[in-house]
Image 1: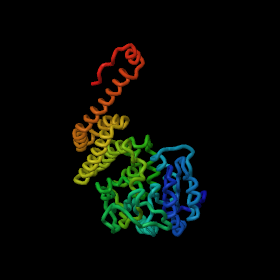
Image 2: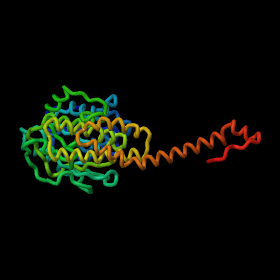
Image 3: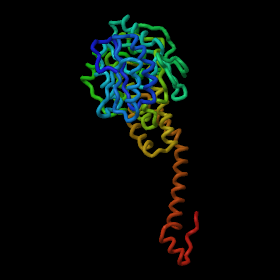
Length: 371
């Protein structure tokens, strides 16, 4: 682990992390040998957002696989602010922000560097990837890279190509390129963007949820980009930080529609935008149904708040209202069942366990019959 990098590398790979001890050992042992082989062209930067687990020990142990920089925040910034902080600490010509559970393919970094060198006039690159399930398909070891079991391939097109317009990568299949780890951007442009924008609370809008996608979209819409078709990593569904219903509600009812609005304002339209809106509506419907069926008090109270904002998204509000209608019958049954249980418990207490009730019974007066 080195304190600084005395040269200007072609690429900085940033790994913002928080309580990632369960993943980082495998992630770093896959990446660091490839970075070591690339030499001065690559900088690896791990930015720890004040982890409370064994992240520091895992990071220290990983130094045997190759050099990298490690920065630990004094306070917890939150996911999105830590991503921006990592980009600001980077020194490469390009910056690539990874998740703490992305595992590189063998030879992937060399292929990416080759693409960067071959297209030095291009400011943004989009990389293909595979998705697997965590923890079932998580590798026990991945020294030098891992290309084992996976669930699906993000994009079927495996050929590298120059895109006339960056937004050609957007489609419903990729959740309109919301993956932080799929984007490589020229660092100078990203840091300039963040001089004029501020991160708020995580998951409160598109910028606070998809900071990297918003950065690239605002810079690159209508401009050429490069698509790297051969997958370079495996990502692991189930290891994300936003897996709870509460955060999913924020994402699908608030942040994602906000992102689609941004794309529409930037000029994206047509069937692919409509397909993305429909897919988000379907996911929002699923989250609402889960919230109502599980009847978690705090989460259920969130639904009206997010619906009010979500209703402003054109073409998507009907799907949400349909979810409420579809869920109404089982929801009412659940309310009735729990109300009956509460009434029975109140009857038991008032007429059988409450001290005045016991005193009345002791004087020979019977309690009212149970309904």
